[in-house]
Length: 238
Image (spheres, helix red, strand yellow):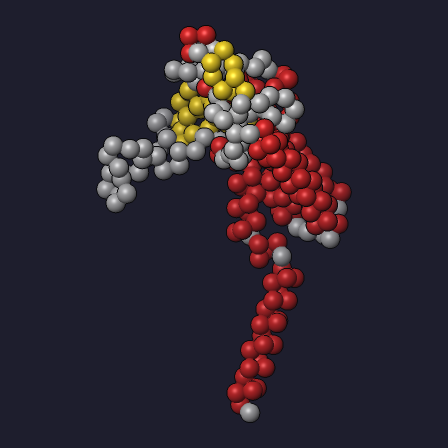
């Protein structure tokens, strides 16, 4: 039991550490705008592209008001607490190590992105004139010199941006029916980070391996179905 816990804690720690190392490195090493915020990694199909988003995984947002951002961050906190509670419950019930690791992936990913929102506005200098920080409808205005007065995001605890950097640049081949000659044909255009990847891997593991993770529930369901089928058969014979 303790060995399981240590394995998951190590996995969570490693994911959080790698996530924060990548984000801090990208944020302090890449320039904003032009070619200074990109770096090819594997030829023409994968690259690092430094951006920041004000919402959830893959840039999803809830709106421009302070309550939208605060609500999103609070939702993250509640979700993380719920995941931690579920993990402890499953661990005490003797769940498989692989399932606990999958839960740990989701937990570490959600926590990694929450760390950005909680602390990055205090760790790094805030520039309201950077495009990442523009937010129309926020009601917060900043003087950006030659660009004039611009609406920018709210700042502070739980209000920070999330740093993203990974992007697949593979495009759909021209023979597919939905290929657009004048548009963006990237297969997966979203820009993501280690935390997003951990959440995705954890969820995919749970979906694909649910029969392995919940054998008792599956057997119980099968037994109920078998009993129901037998009952229907007996009624038919009568």
